Each structure stands twice: as C-alpha cells, then as structure tokens.
Length: 236
Image 1 (tube, rainbow, N blue to C red):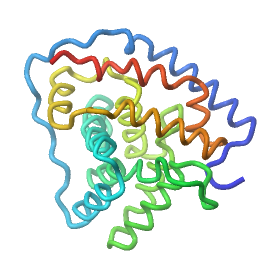
Image 2: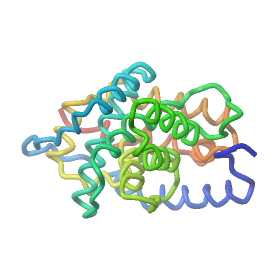
Image 3: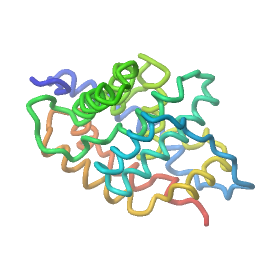
C-alpha cells in the first residue's frame, strides 16, 4: 500500500468512527441557525513573504470556491482556538488552512493513496522551496491528518485545522461558534457553490483513491451532512 492508504481493518475503524461522529453531530445538522446580532471583528492572518507566496500558490491551484473554503477554515480555526483554549502558532496554522486541499481532485499518484497525505507532501515541498522549511513538518502533518474522523492531537495546528475543515464541510461543532463570528466569516468569504463542488470532488476521491479516508467517509454517507450543513442555511 502507498502512504495514506488504509488496510481493511483500518477502513472498518474509520467507518465506525465516522458513523459515530455523524450521529453525535446530528444536533448541529437539525438546529436552525439564528440571525447574528452583530458582525464580529475577524482576526487578520499573518502578513509575511511566506504567507503571501502560499496564498498565491493556493489561488493558482484551487478553484475560487475551494480557496474561499480555505480562508474560512482559518477563521473557524481561530474561533476554535479561543473556544478550546489552544495556542497555535498563527503562521503555520494559516499556511495549513491555505494549502490543505491543494491535492483534492488530483490524479492518482504513486506517492500517496490519500489526497490529504499527497497534499501534505506537496505543502512541505512548497515550504522548503520558499524558505519555510521550519514549518514544513507541522504544516504537512496537519494537512495529512485533516480528514481523520476524530480530532488529531499531534499538535494544536492539526487539531484546529481538522475541526475547522469538518465544520466548513459538514457542520460539525457549528453550535459552539458564536453567531456573530459565523455571520462575519460568511460575509467575508461566501460559500457560493462550495457544497456542490466539494461533493463532486469527494465522489471523485472515492473513485480515484478507494482505500483513502476520504473514500471511506464518502461511502459512509458524508454527502448527507454536507447537504444539511447549517452554514448553508444561515438567514440573510
């Protein structure tokens, strides 16, 4: 097996964990979002040469809808850092958010059997080529683990990217984020076309990399929480 591929036992374990997580998240999927009272002030990402290069790199590789998803993940991750009392380094966290989906929808590769693992490798190579080698391991690990059914505790950056991505895609932990933060994030980075595009991309991942975590999540019915994500039902 290539890196990121799961054996039969691991696929069963991921499936069981995913189904349990979907069951726990149902309260968020049926909760009707409240109208935010006022917009929150959103944190600005770090402004460094490496961040600017990574943003340009992400814009080049990602569709507009997936790029906006990456930006939203930064804000959700920042919100969860406050909620969970985590203390990530802002630069690698933002880099991981920007680059976590760069291999989503990529052709099959002998380097990795999971788009998250493949994306982590690509992110590490990009960072090392742009004087960001100090962050390569942290960012690559966070990206490689962001599709795990459970929050990875290998670092604050990995945990926050994971929970941010699962909120933006499937609504997980939606009820914990203040309504004014949700409203501000969606105003700054609209979700236009994202759910439809991501569903198509995930379906493709299940076909191209059938032993990946993404494929297992697809077969476990993750299209339902995507379709029912409360972020797509926010009042205007």
